[in-house]
Length: 122
Image (cartoon, rainbow, N blue to C red; front, side, top):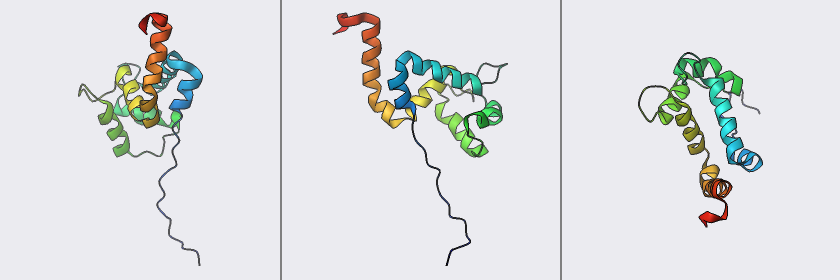
């Protein structure tokens, strides 16, 4: 007999940042993160605020997040304690939220150094 109670299921999440990093390279990935920042930011303040995150989060498929979830996201990345995310704070937060990308960050760093300095670094 099927239960009529709705089961609490956590949403399925797939981390696409590592795939994006491999396909786009370091500069391309940062460009995409900056585009995401621009979608979420408050245009007058040039930072992501709680209000701008709440207003624009549906553009990224995050409309089901609660106010508490959104506030936690802001607090997680707000390193300077101003209650908002700068572009740098946002990019760092996206890297930190991607365990696989954090593991692969050494590869990305080496690739960026090689592109910048060639073999002279090694």
